[in-house]
Image (tube, rainbow, N blue to C red):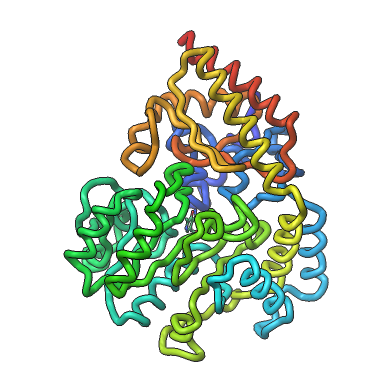
Length: 431
Ligand code: PMP
């Protein structure tokens, strides 16, 4: 495969755009610092780069593209928005329609607000939780990414529960001291942290199903325990469902696990590929937000008609019967195929999968928390990633990122992918 144009565009990009990319994970640094591929066009489960190479896409733009690229129903919605004018700075009827759709799908959203990104959504839930509880600190789980606002860029590392250290320059020690990190799936550590800092814990922030160190499900009873311990302490429970909502079923992961948080942050899929975020929760808590309450949140682009109309169209597609069975069927086919080939070639692979999302880890027996995911073999993954890319299979460039299926993937895509996996494992075995 030739990447001449991508290489040349990357060189040009680097002289104008810091680092050549507008989000660090796009740089391919984690997989050997190779040139990122510049895409030109996408259709369904595939996209094509500027050199004309074709790829089956499992990146799905890190989650949002669940109905594939350029789905005609979403394209039509965006065209409609473009024709009618993309922004007025006034309310539109589409916001009502979409808010109601989200509430029907996720009943804990007694009131919602639209923002522009997952980062904004999570950041605002924390502000509102602090306003409601009149407390300062937040507990989060190690390795969980919640966007790039200061407070949550803290202590993504593993280890015992401790006051956080910043993961990013520019995040002050003061801010870091307001975050306590505990391991996922470890109720004892959470109980300890609540014992120690309880009076000042405004909220416990959790991905109900982790998406950011691979797909990691809560152990039985874990989320029930999170609610029980937090509520006994007077703290709110915030679910970050930016990745998980509408990924595994029509609704939130909270519907799937059967536990309701006090507040929820949403993003990604609900914008149908356009920028969006949303947050919501119990009426009494949401009443903290301006214009009704003292907690401020605003946005020039918040609820813009293009994102909202694309989001409505996306959810309409997902409502179709069989959507999630299709994703599950293809996910299982992919997972079984990878595991069979790993056995055949004696490659130490461990897969975590839930319906249409899976993660392939190397050289670990299980992944239940960030520590396990960290232990997976980055060199093996880098070798795997590069070989798959050369065969036209585009994965996320990280050893614990998920592969995402879309409604437009087919059995033929999976068969083609498994051929590439076979080739790759055979190469890895012989090297
Ligand atoms: N929360 C989670 C769980 C995420 O995965 C992400 C993005 N990967 C965010 C928040 C931030 O969303 P955004 O990139 O839209 O700001």
